Figure 1 (tube, helix red, strand yellow):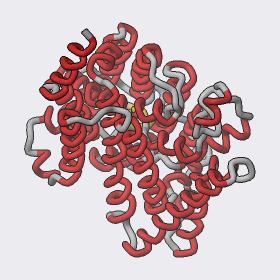
Figure 2: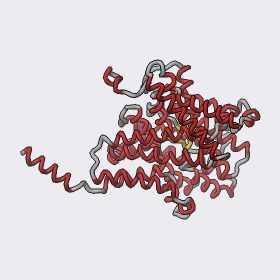
Figure 3: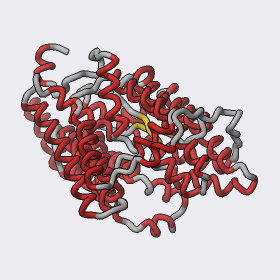
Figure 4: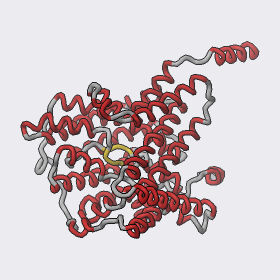
Length: 456
């Protein structure tokens, strides 16, 4: 960076800046702690009725897959600070494939086989550059900014409903814990911004400080329960592909999973735009192509380890914005932590013991920051009538799909269930289509024509 860029930058540590191993490890762990990586495998295990031992193995594999995928994406492929974790999008499809094939006792094998084929297809899209060409053609700044905005907007209800309002325990205590965590995060982040030199440590570690203080408050309230940590094993070996795991290939299951991957790629694109924006580094053709390949490799590894597809987590873009730390080394460290937690039952159980309201209070602030990042991109574009619809309709769809009754979604055809199951994917597609099909206002055409005449 030049001196001018450094002065204008809001980052304290850039993507390619050097950090010690100790600093990277400390800063990396707060990304891990802020990600609910264990939630997706826990939900899937509950739906398909896995035993406690099988559930633990699935969660363990998910942690390891997330770690390896994060290292591959941030260091080797996309080369941007992107954290990978299990996606919520495939949950319904995974359950459907499992039950449809479980009469032969090979339900999970069909899930893994379909995921494997879908991952290979994603890798091909990246290697051929097809996905990148589609992005360049259909995602100008107005669409990219809208997608970033709706990514944050779509996550806010999850942060509040799932982690605070509908979490177990007393609602008043949950709200208080969320407020304590959120205020702590903001306080330390602002101290760091107000005192750039002496307060830098508070800003870059604001997330982990908020998690610790929030957890201590939960302990004081009698909410923090660490009893399961004592019973968990210290070291546990993951399942091995083709040894402990079987793979089967069913055509309908594969087609179902390919649809899921299409929706997944639409969602992860929003994450890439968000990360690119907060890192103050534009997405290049190489970034996107390598990112698609990295996404495919991560999903391939996930299936080989016996777990579900991974995707880029937009939560981490908000954390980068708050802490000002965008170093790829931090994300490599986060990936290493994931692997360590996946190999240790005690450590992974410790993470899952952090009370939901504590995470929710931090999560909702992060979501707001992501949305603001989108607004920053949008404000650089001239907003006329067409642009208003391109922004407004996806925003309405995001809110509508959050509020619509689940029973209605389940009554729709399978493909629509997959699509509407991700408000980000649906709203992103809507933004792309609207920007492409809506006509440019006549008044704009007249102004352009008038300028041409004056020039002549």
